[in-house]
Image (cartoon, rainbow, N blue to C red; front, side, top):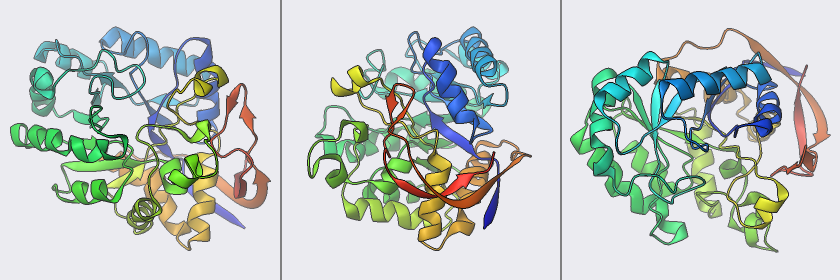
Length: 331
């Protein structure tokens, strides 16, 4: 049995930098044609030169993989800076609240400090992506605590398109639906479709499932599955695959590694829920359409064949280590 897809995009992935980037980019290229690689590197991607340099490093590591350029929004950015970033190919800017996630210590203290950048982005048609958590709130409430910030952004910039990244609970699904279709979309990860708090810490702590936002209840996971399986075009795939070596993971680093097998795991999940025909929209159509990108021309072929996710990819422990999958990309 075979299933052919337009080659997927990953609209939220971490490829890191330096020597580490090489293997991560190659792993991603086996499944994805394009990736929106997060700009919270050290130093961050904040200038046209940074974008060109990062794209060059990714292309050298994985020639078949294209970067969808995104920059990290900084408080001192002006309209001229945003205009130059768009000319360099950027289609989006990413807002990180200070301290919300990995390498966000230099993020904005408050959203008003990036209003000049957001005004410029609205004016020239760039998309705002954001890590939607309020870091001062309780860990399970951080998404909901961030809703007032999003409402403030929309009130001040009503035509600015936004992507609520890695939604993790039912309340956030409902919140996304409260905005116009052409204004708000959301990315959904593999791990938030698969796992719950019980998987993370029910029988013993599994550090390789620890991410931000954390996986939540079965009811939250089921709500995410319901909206994705329905074929709702506002919700599309972004893995948030974020590799950390064993030392960092055991020290508490947030992030899971799913890029090497994400499409195959999604195919297994969709097939077992009787919605395999919805997979192409989720992975290959809705995100491109929302961002105004052409759909990919190439395809991948999935074959129905059982296999086991390896424990490690290089020195990174996979989030789905030991999981039996029922679909495999035919190379």
